[in-house]
Image 1 (cartoon, helix red, strand yellow):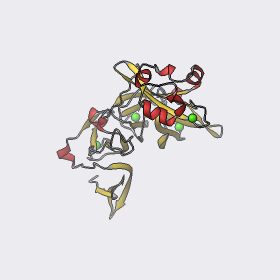
Image 2: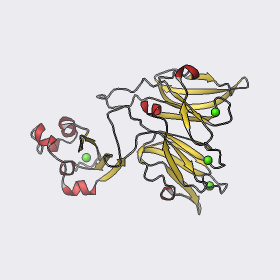
Image 3: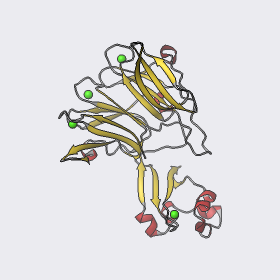
Image 4: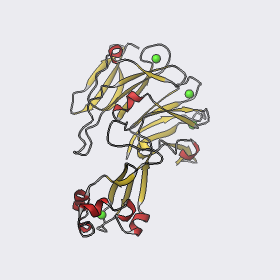
Length: 285
Ligand SMILES: [Ca+2]
Ligand SMILES: [Ca+2]
Ligand SMILES: [Ca+2]
Ligand SMILES: [Ca+2]
């Protein structure tokens, strides 16, 4: 699922490219070539960073004249863990042959890959598998590749997620990016909105990170305790969190959108949240 998009000239040819973020994919770049947008992600160094990306903001964070970007991700404060060696995987196929697509989420626990859905849920969704898994033990002992027929497993689309931390991607000036994880405090919740702006007025771009989610499966509950983080930029692509008491942030809502507006000549940040009123914050710079 796509979650965010921005236009930015990342290769310096005065024409904007389309940057997109989404679940089960790397941040991706589309370039307008011969009258159509073509996916050039494989030339950007971004293609290995598969995540559950949820937001994008652009800016020249290292002040070298080219456009960099930051991407919000799911974070590390949930049951989900993802690495290159032990990725989250989404198997997609019509496993029960009823004409509709069945997504099956797989993850690693203590070195073993298994499904997120327990026997009851999987078999309730696809009842023909009640016949295959008569017992819970038979389901637990079954390897992921043996859950379904060999043909269905091999022909299934297998989407990966290997990174759940939020990142900044610095441009080398030619549209090739080096990624670095943002400070760990950003991984306390899914980052749904990133705002790139010199918030403290020191001449360097900062990042405002806002998030939480109420879209989880009911067994996991909401992630609702993240009040937002202000990351102070050093003008060289590095960011350090500003202590809560110094920035006055307490936006522990399900943030979904932001907009910079001017009100009585002063910059303000408008914040749209699920299950809450619209919020308005005045900015000093
Ligand atoms: Ca360009
Ligand atoms: Ca730059
Ligand atoms: Ca099906
Ligand atoms: Ca600043």
